[in-house]
Length: 221
Length: 221
DNA sequence: AAATATTTTTAGACAAACCTAAAAAATATT
DNA sequence: AATATTTTTTAGGTTTGTCTAAAAATATTT
Ligand SMILES: [Mn+2]
Ligand SMILES: [Mn+2]
Ligand SMILES: [Mn+2]
Ligand SMILES: [Mn+2]
Image (cartoon, rainbow over all chains, first blue to last red; front, side):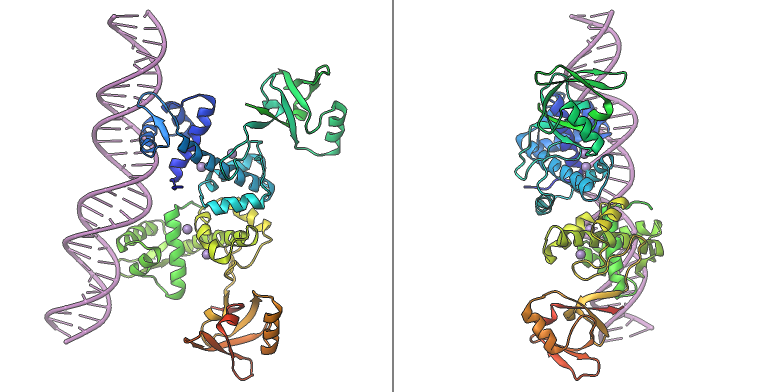
């Protein structure tokens, strides 16, 4: 597999993330995301087109080709493995890992990343709950997010609890929530960010913002 | 502390290493080291001079300023900590670590490096036996090298033995060599790379290339 | 369907980091 | 000391990635 410059990689990764929401990505959208000017986007899209990494027609937006997607998944794999390393091994806080991983992701030795993966025990999610692509670029399609970020009425399965204190576990036990519990968020109250959730056939219960921020769940997108 | 480009950092580090042997470094020397053309060296020296990182007078070579030395030690710290990480944690072999560290050394988050240092247990030497500068740029002046690389007639102290097999220890016991032994290499025979070494007042003894490659010693430079 | 507003592309410029070929300076040889 | 050789610098050019300002295409209003 060829090597790409840091700039090319940042563009490819940004397109990947943007086209997940939209179908195709526009020049202005990408310029805003990367904090560059639209003219720079056009320049780069021409280049990525000749390298067959994007489908691009002047004035009609662009999206990654199958090859481009493979490259993007490689970059995302590196980014998320480094984030996991920084949080888990070096004890960085969740908010700090992203900026450093933004640089580390461009060191592209395949052996380095595969050995790092092994050293970390083949983690499946980064510290933000996003899935880490495996060495073949396969990525879990279900997303892990905290309950606050779960879409309403989406069935999800509790996959992770970040605070393991006695107080937390006592509360979870009382509410009958644990790893594997299936639930849906029915309403979100903006006043205090409390949530109303439904667990199987039980009647809906209410949980505080504080609690919801420490519970993570997976759902299919 | 300011940030420097990958190119600037590679030049600064190369000057640091070259001026250790010579006093001042020449254009052609540095061009050979970095595999670039002399014209590129002149360009960069002008730039590094305006940034006050080198002392440079046209046609008369250059050397690092005190500021330039500080920058160099920061890069070398990052390089050697990553080499240690790769060898110790990711199980890379000694020969593989250098190339990857050549890239990782340019990720310049100070917090990243200080936390990595702590995670690794503040190692004092990289896998090649070179000392790792601490977070203030202090570096041990004594070098650890294998006997093959020891300068002739330099008093040195055995500091490390890489092969710990019974056969090795038997041989070392017979030759009366152990950690802490003071010795000097008196001659090197090019035919088989065997060495004649002197241990205190004993008469000189001969050791094979194979053995010498597994014995490391420190000396002041 | 025209007129207007927005988005995107083109044209041309600039800095960083490299190069080749020619000129200048320093060094070595006779 | 004059000449020849080697080293270093200068002059000018290329590629990558960015920018501004103007032109062209598309989308939205009236
Ligand atoms: Mn991230
Ligand atoms: Mn990045
Ligand atoms: Mn090295
Ligand atoms: Mn390097």
